[in-house]
Length: 205
Image (cartoon, rainbow, N blue to C red):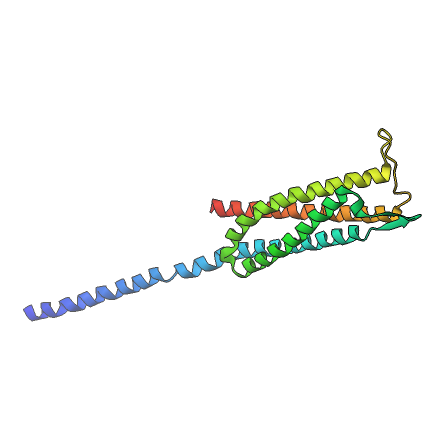
């Protein structure tokens, strides 16, 4: 009787050990599969949208600068150039800075697209400069547009005569350049909104 009791004890112990080991494996297995895919898609979509917007900013800034720089027109040996107006000089300088800035930030955004882990760090720095550049480009667009409007309509109250009926080609270039610059300002606004939206999603998590 004693020998049969001592022999059954190890068997009972072995039966209890097997389910415990299987239970530990079942608990440890699921977590790695669920977590990895969930975080990546939103960062990738935001980074891709940012790359596209920054490329559009570069294209619009380049077109605006080229159009106004090539706006020279001469009537009766009297030329009309963009550098005859301080407002247009500031306009060209602001859009040139925007174009250079967009090249640099597009490269960084493309790098962040390849490595999503560094995207929030890049985003936190860009949003500050985007807001500053939005103010600069918007001010330049408004200033150039105001001078262009005076050239188109004049101002009878102060005796400023309109010139666009004479320098029509010059005024068309200025108007087209201001319109493209306005598009660049809208792109910058969308960049700021996208950055704020992405950062707010990060802080809420």
